[in-house]
Length: 577
Image (cartoon, one colour):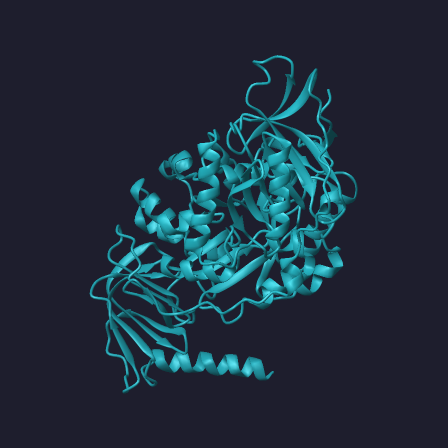
């Protein structure tokens, strides 16, 4: 009752400000206001703010003022709602504090994060620690509950039982269930049943389910949609976008570190359709991208450059994203009763954050951040998750026919049968090892074709959706050096030649996250990747190629400590044919 009365009193105060009876705390004057509801740019507008909320938006009438009222002259510049990032992975090598520090300058004031990285290794405790750190941050951070879909049941060792997740679903910061790989929802047995049941529980809480439909179409896509997912960020063609929009999906066009899809789907903007279910997202940005390109602001600039009308671009990254998550009563538009999240840019066609305000507090102005992230703290055991004892490397066959993962692109693979005694077929073959790093001593050695590595070995504990350390190498000695060094630094990535560690990136939190400044992370990662490129690897950002060898998110043949896994039927395959 007391909380409801406090809320009512705040609304009464806002109403009195709008009537001119109480002075605002902050007044924007002389602005060109972008109305996200109508896609209009309206000149000579004012915004009155009280207690971090908007009380009035309209012509430059004289507001009541006192000596505490701050007046900001927008000088004809555009006032936008703060940007809303609807699908991102915060943990892309750097920690949350560094992430928020660099997001502030982008104009994003609200984001919705996937947190599978915390749950796959840290379990429910990892997710809870993340959630506890969100209050008091200078921007608004929500999260989705990770479904923690892995290749095999054995890799889901830390996945909580569904009932353990119920308290998190009651958290107002939790907006629903994160991306469910469509293949996992159809799995037979315990793996599929857990995810299907979790989806049903989340819908029962009145919360949404985020989708992941890469490779699904026709009846498979519609059968998947029956389980309740309402968004997808995976379409890479105009036809895929349209198919999902017609099924009622909120379609998130991805333009970030993993993939950049705007160019491939730009034709959708020439169609005479309703765009209110389209938004722009990054799906995460790595340190190099953050520092050289930006974040969601880079996606906005790219869309403008492609000729997408400014009003549509800004609606996609404000109101459309907010409506999908049912946050539009609070954010997504500049209107009375909503949060004072305001972004000032020079003009409709020139996106460059001059001022960023969140909840009525200026957090960025004139190229300088004015707010600092709140510190995050994790217990010591979360920095000791690489549990590998003495390793005896398995011996794969050295003659006859063998099965290999062949790279089609830097991320997509296929199953390839090679004759190890045929020089042409066995050309560009390296070893690939999946080693369970949870202390169970399980491992599998196979072959990788098309990576290009000519000497040495590179390993990572930052692999997606599994609990394995993955090592690609030309010789066993280099691979052993990599394993021992990854154990010593508690995770990350290492490149070694023989007994020498050539380059390394330390990521001790869950074996995936560095707490160093983003600039340092970029430099260390770049050194590892440069070492790979200098030694024959032909793919851009080659660490991501290794990181994704174990995920069920990307077709077609993957690897884990049990063997190769063929995604279409999840059959576990051996090296021998």
